[in-house]
Length: 339
Length: 290
Image 1 (cartoon, each protein chain N blue to C red):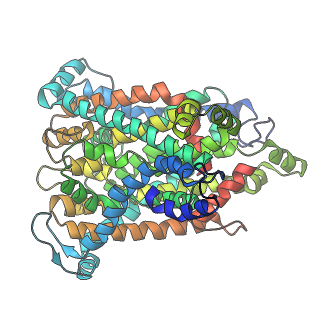
Image 2: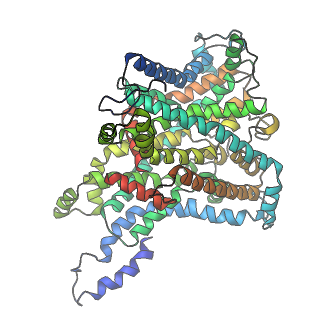
Image 3: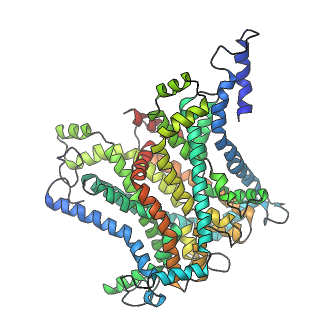
């Protein structure tokens, strides 16, 4: 990186110096820039090798038919044509969205409620935070194994239902059972995390705003909807965007719940637990269709990009400082810091 | 949320700060949340300390049994637990150290120095942060295979040795809490870039490094899809993959699998509890900045 950038700077620095001087008088000599450029270079070198190159390569790969060992065969856009006609792929897209919706909406709502309650509760707040956050830091594989036993036909969930006189549910065998169990695992994992994020947002609201609202005679509902929620918007936006990105990449829960010894996994009975990333993994690494997997990666990328933009627009609402895109987010962040 | 009250205290939020009844309600709901959060861990201990027959019993046995050590011993006999634990520790520790070093170094440069194309380079860094990892799963694996790194721990450590999130996070911190006067004083004493980084900046970065360190460590420890894909040799895997394999091969032997799950979870919970105070405060701050 340094070698690319230095020449542009070097002539200007040299021209200013009278010949014969050994040390530049201006502080902006090229050697001054070398240490910081060297300091930032590891990231760019690693990104070039393990980020940018693979991404460019995956464009190429997505037009090839390749099993990873033999020769590549150019198939061009036909690859994407096959993908768009693949009913299992569409099923996985639908499943992913259903699971995403079933988990994200209740999760963000519960997190908001918990954050409000935590905010009004001073005692043991440190202990609550630790307890709420523990699901998020533990291994998803281990906890999926645990939930797998809870949701088994003779597992704890159905035992509890029998105790209160209800029939058992096919948690891991029926369409909505599968989607509910995966969603419940996601909710369990992320509610506390988002509650803590929302709590931080609540705590950042200046007390004067509440006092001003009180002076103006606002009741608690007006305070909530006119003062609290608008100010929480950037934080809710953050949570919604991260939840969407995470939600569209669900893999571990479905993979571990329904894995088997033969060819990886099928996503459970009726493939109702098959998600986009699970299908990508299945095609690329179990059936060795690398080109197909690469193409699927790009479709997933497009879906995530579209939903991220929609999310930004939805949550950002119609306020003046709405500036979708990274720039807008950063500008808003700067504005907040200045407050 | 029926317990809403008009705000009274300086905490300022109009929820539950009023009557004793509403405060009791708030506490009850919060406690219920704690129970739901922690129950799966309790259940894991129950399952790991019982026999497989206990699991199918109705009504279910809700208290831990006496077989915990037996089951753990069987895990050690069945899979190379310590081997995969060792792999995981190497990846998590080395990976974390590299991330802390490279990220803080780059953050120091971005926060306190001017250099050509700085804005462009920083913008590029933020854009890379938006790229989902799954996009490059296939080509990254092919790259690793070409390098001859597939199946080696290098494949788990090197590609993630510097990351955009950490640089962004450390830079925010450096801008706010590293006084220019201190650096100027160091310069007068003749210290160059790297000396200033090592002796002045790094010690002051400690709180931010603590958060980034735990965050990175947890991420590396729990990562599943990438080790699953790239650690092609079944005898040389990380803890997560070993546990998943145990689950495939012995899924009728519940108590064995649960003992393995418990053993894989304990080290990380200890790390988290030790660093939780730092971690939770800074996580919230990080989200506010994003």
